[in-house]
Every structure is written in structure tokens, then in C-alpha cells.
Image (cartoon, rainbow, N blue to C red):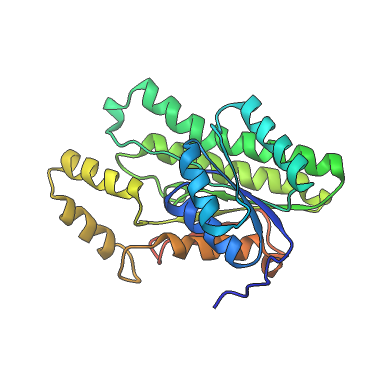
Length: 260
């Protein structure tokens, strides 16, 4: 059972918090006592999740690829909450195709949301922490595809490898300011994104969606599809003082699919 006081008094912001892994992260942080500001490109989804876990909900629509909008949201958070302790840069997208068929638009969209979005979110947080001379914790959502190049997801893998490298570089740069930066690498997680990917992969490989799903399970030593809560609990650990001596880490949350 999660200690309800593990993050008592902490202030957190989560991007991509309107569904899937993001919603589970909000639930985990709030359940451990944090006040969570929920953001998502879908502002209504963000507001709904915020209402679910806070009697005084805090939320905003946020396109993480927009630097000005990201800065504005962070300014709003600082104004309303007086600061932040934890930032979870979780917003992400995926498409699936063979490399020869990936369009520039697909490449750009994956890199913009998954890599640039993490950069802009992290940058906004670090700027304000340094200005306020206060410590902070960042947890970025990378992927199993940041550890092992994924066929049919080359552009997505590239964006997530970027998240991993950026996390390590930033961690080295800001550690002297008391800021920790880590990322989590989920595997085959049961989300709406996964359901779309299963259909795409089945079509591209001439399989049934159920056959794809069973292959995911067979590749996972722990023998089941991962749930968003499996990821969120690791994010909670990385956001808390239990991980106080970890920075620059890319923590696998894949059920054993990747052990590197």
C-alpha cells in the first residue's frame, strides 16, 4: 500500500494527464499526498482527471510543442501554487509504419510531441527552479523503445531515444542545483494508444490483433500486459525522496522485456 504521506505537501505538474499512463500518474501522486496540476492537449480530459482526484481541481489545456503556451502554464502554476516540486513530462504520441513509408509529417509529429515536448517542459521547470533557487524533481516518460529500436516504430523510437539522452544530459547539468532528472521506460502498456498500435501492427504484419497482443505477452517475462498503474508506481518512487540518490537514470518498467 502506498504511503498516503509520501508526497505530503508537494506540488506536482503532469503533462498528458488526461488519460492512460498520465491519468495513473496523477492518481499515484495525489494518492501519496501531492497537489497535482493536470495538463493535457485535451483540456476537458485534464479537467475531468483533476476533478477525480482533487476537491479543488487544478488543470489546463496544454500543447507541449508550444513554447509560449508551456511557459504560460508554468507561470500560472507558480502564481496559483507558489511553486512546484515535481514535474512529470509524460505527454506522448505514436504512429506506426515501415521506415520506407513514414511521412515527414509522421516523423515531425512524433519528434515534436515526444522529444521537443519533454525539452520544453523540462526547460520551463528548470528555469523557474533556478530563478527561485529551489530544488526539484523531473520524471520523463521514455519507453522500452528508447532502449531497443522497435520495428515499425523507428520514428517513435528515435524520439524516445532522444528523451533518454536528454534526461541524462540535463541530469548532469542541473545536479549542482539540487534538481534530479530521471526517466521511466514502460513496455507494452494497456492504454488507448496501445489498442491503436495493436490494430496498426496487425494490419502491417498480416496478423490478427489478438495474435499481436499474445505476442506482447510472450515477450514479457512477467507474463501479462502491463497496466498504467505499474508505470505510475515507479514514477511515484522516482518523484519521491525514496529515490533521493538517483539521477540520470532510465528505469525499466517493462516486466522484464528489457533488462539493460
